Length: 288
Image 1 (cartoon, rainbow, N blue to C red):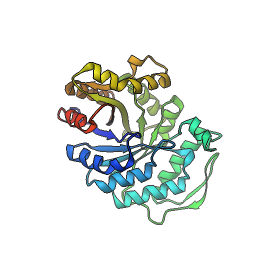
Image 2: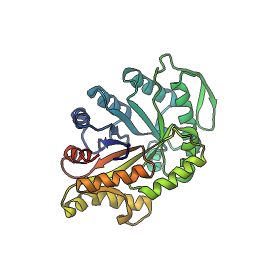
Image 3: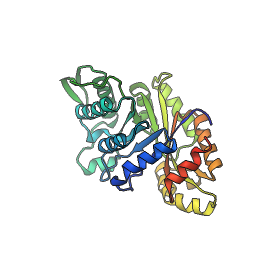
Image 4: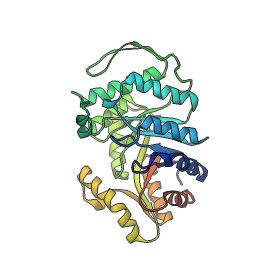
């Protein structure tokens, strides 16, 4: 398989107490990454990342993604720096806009989502590099703030974004971009063009989340994926059968990962539907 990292998402619907063993088993199977989720009302992303990192020795752990409106950039940088110092080289920090309806629910809707995200990413990255930050932005204000214990190995800060202006923002402000589930190779080519337009350099990474279901019974696979692809079809504004998935027998699923890699994905993170997600992961990894 093309040289692409293969990760697995610990789905937000799964109870937090199952995360340590899941992460250990995913690592033992040979996964490169374990990604955790932060959605309003579910588990906290930083605490979940700490749990996954503490339960494993090698695997990289991604936060996908922390909503900028819910996070003080100074506090977020403090949390990330702590993890990066204790587990050097094993953290990826994803930051995004957050779901507008959820942000409004908690009174955190920004006046300018684009400004908030860019100012948050820029200041968090600077703090993690050990800089003192002075910022009087449209949404973020920091008055000579610095970290006492910045990490020796600075973790990448990546933007989880979808829309064109946000993809350009990621290209100029972040270390990488996270693309949400349902996007296929053609989408990645368009995203890469927008990220490049924003000014991304050659080291800017592309991480792609993908709905996945590995199995030999096509009807069972379709049934397992249906509620996920149905909801995302409405969100993406496209027919349900055009929502990209990594699905089918293991060899076919592995080919789908190759297609994403050939379109520019550096990491593919599988969000499994159906029974025995770790067994599905093992089947895919056997074809890498």
